[in-house]
Image (cartoon, rainbow, N blue to C red; front, side, top):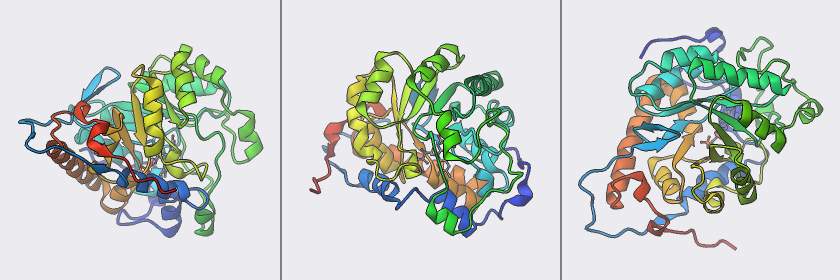
Length: 357
Ligand code: FNR
């Protein structure tokens, strides 16, 4: 891995840990954190129901999606402001993911220019996919320009986040004193992106027509991130508006009180009916959770906060260690379930959570 330091590294904490304010922002959730907690609990409420004496002779976690094959069915989720977690920020995360064959979705609100991340990642022979997440802030021509920049730099898909038209700092993060300095680097934001006020954000909130417009013009496959309702997934597929869907509630960071993604996933898989691949994120904290997501019909998953914790506590090496451990655990879990490949994981292997009401 090439050592790399992001600009503004001096503003970041030592890699050994997070300040209370950074922790509250990076690891916290919206409101009372009900969705954040529900996400984590929901994967764990499933139990396995396997047959014995069916161990396959070989197990591979390899996945194929949007024309690429890579060694394990996961990508780092797009996460803003990772300079708060480590001086190497998104570059350190990207290099560790590439070295371990994990994909990466770079956030619009990354603190490193998208071109710099692409230059570092694309030559890695083991890398997974490199996608760019787009926040449609500002004028459509401004966010199309950012999508074009990503395409030119070598990104392989645009992930359009549709679940966060407005955002604000959570009460916990505010109480912990979280605030970004005025000169905080945001080199990938669309020009003219509104700052701060709810009303400014409301004026540029996205509509389905805008998605169609972007899908027509964008030179890359379009992935919609933040779908929770089966009717939205069905509409996106019926109208041919996307190439993949990510079931997500933004990790419980936007609207508190949303259902856990584990509970939303099966309905969306059903309404999509195989027309586009379905991915999921939110609350995945182990390879065993990932196996549940795959059994429920996800083709791949995105992982957020566990990578921030690994990056903050042990730097890129911590991220690499996490992926290695998850890879071993996923293959072991699949072997015990009699599954030679991710596609063999099936809802029949699971017992649903007992109803709570
Ligand atoms: C996010 N997430 C996010 N999503 C997005 O589309 N664009 C973004 O810039 C960000 N920024 C961001 C920052 C931080 C600190 C976190 C923790 C998350 C949401 C992210 O992509 C993903 O949906 C969730 O993090 C998944 O949940 P877990 O794995 O963190 O529980």
